[in-house]
Image (tube, rainbow, N blue to C red):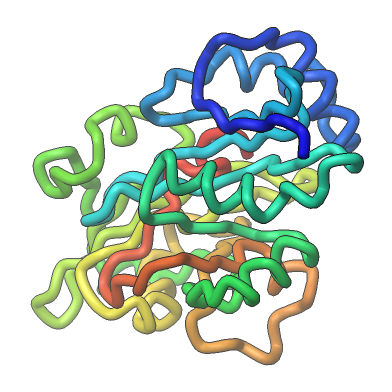
Length: 265
């Protein structure tokens, strides 16, 4: 049995590791991974490495998810070289445990999906659903939305309220306050607003509350988590943001703030 170990340390060659990542994930460029590795701060992001005979044979990047009542990390870009695949599960489990006891896996590929099923991860969402934003004069007059600042949501770091790509809203509905955050991006030129944070009530209410802020996002595609297994959602959207965790989900807080979704997309 060859000597192997797992480390979380900045002591590695970024150029060489970015090449390894690019070979495993050819849809991303070497420069993309080099920029990502240079931004690792070992607080909000960490890189976990598998060494075999003192050579890097596996890696994963973990992003800290904020706004929750637990210290949650979301792994991305997990790989183990083909000649050491027998160490994949050990590396995945031990490496994640070195970072946090609470792991949220977002949009796993089919291989990872089967691993998570075998590990009895809890399904946190069925994927995504969508609505098309449109201007509705009645909705605009009736439903007042307010901007949100750090004082309203103290668990979310102040920096997230200062970003231009994150849109924060508070809705007052039936005397209850609901908080939303959308990540602004695009897909083939189509403006996308991806829900990355919700709190204030049952997550199952998200779909019914979204029409109240439609006027904020007309001509945009609103992507939000599907907690009800919506049969009619197209598969290309449905499979996005399937989420699985090794912990019981909070029924009143949804957050992927700080994950790859907000930091890279």
